[in-house]
Amino acid sequence: MTDGTAHRFIRNVKVLTLSNVLYRVVSIGVSVYLARDLGAGVLGQYAEVMNILTLFLAFADLGVTNYVIMEVSQQRQLSQTYLNNFFLLQLLTGSAMIVLIMGMGIASGYSTLLLSALFIGSFGPFFAGLSTVYNALLSAHEYLHPFGIIEMICMTVFFAGNLLVVLLHEGLLALVTVTVVVAVVKVLLGRRWVAKINLSVRFVVDRIALLKLLRYGFPFLIINGTHFALQRLDVLFLSWNVSDVTVGIYAAASRLIFASLFFISAVGAALYPVFSRIIATEHDTVEQLFHRANRYLFILSMAVTLFVYFCAPLIVQGLYGEYFMDSIVLLRILAWFVPLFGLGVLPSNVLMVGGGVWKAVWISIFSLIVIIVAELILIPLFGLKGAAVGVIIAEAAAMVLYFVFAVREFHYTVSIRSLLGIPAAAAFAFLVGMFLTSYHPAFQFVIAFGFYISLLFALGNISKIDILQLRILLHPNSEGLV
Image (cartoon, rainbow, N blue to C red; front, side, top):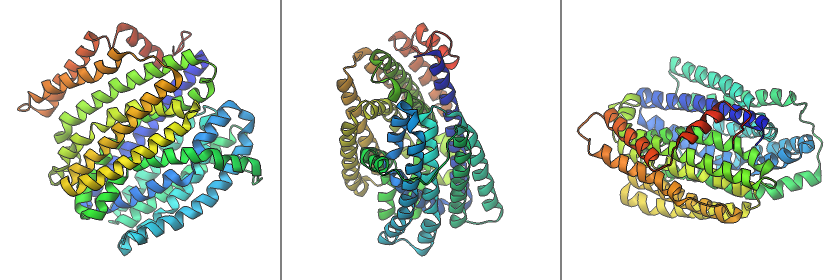
């Protein structure tokens, strides 16, 4: 990988990480406010509404975003054509989303309050869909640093809006309205940044380009939809079986876990256009980058899991208060979602850009079936714990299949020691921490983490060369990334 590409990649990862951190911090802040000031019932209602809106948002771009990034990253001259037709497609799709969201709310038998919140909130996916058009073009040009600026502005609006809600003693409808305002701001800012690369929407329809978007976007639509469903169906199923208060107890834990994925998501998003551009011509480079990034993400994600598991009592009590102590065991179960997600991100990326997109589609469909069956069986038997375990089972199935198919599809070599050493080190560290249950949770984590890092060095999963490579990643020089 060239030095210029290395610099762009690191800058993009840093910016995307910053934007993800901002989003998660503010999102958790809203959850804490709802939990402490409005109670678990309102938190449950908010989670139900936002999960439905987010679920539909996954389908709002018809899977076109990934295809546009892949195509434009390879052929920049197609930028204007795809911008025009993608924007038109989003206008039509966003309008249909409003109708479908309301239809789902009515079919689910939601109260008038929740239906009102869904109607207001449905304009969020509409405008968010338009903003994805601009985001896709920026990503394809590997021009991602504006995302950090956009996110900072949007999160400022989000924070100010929710602060106003608190000061005015408003509730669910006002909170949902704030999300719509943020989506509108994101569209306006995206339009401005795309103009900086000499692009602007023109309503010039190219029938061939429009048909290609619909045709080739379809597999990505399935992948994106099932990906979001894996993180949303648990709350949706619970909303049909338990009270809003109970859903709130569960949402307090699940929102924290998904918020912890910020760095993994940033690396995946930054590598996607890189893989798209070089996978056909630089097999060895892609394989080295794939294995190195995958190993680092796995190491990091297992550390996050150890932290969340042992510090769960401190996190829940500190953020939500005594009333949510039942969320501790749920947070500990869902913590194991993080390494599964981390291992699946890059294999799924490689499959999608390397010609194995339909394999990724069938894996996604299979994982969707798994979570539906798991939730239908486990929720009636084990309640909230069953819902959490169902998410873990589905993500594990998807991760294993993504990894196996990616390795087989591109004939990558796999080091068994590298693959098994990390979970082995984490498992031993976990057992050490469990022997210290009478000590403070923070002390448990520190000791467990110390054993984890020590074992990674002892087993050869981290070396001095890795430390050097990480320094190069953070400060790219002429040696590049690989």
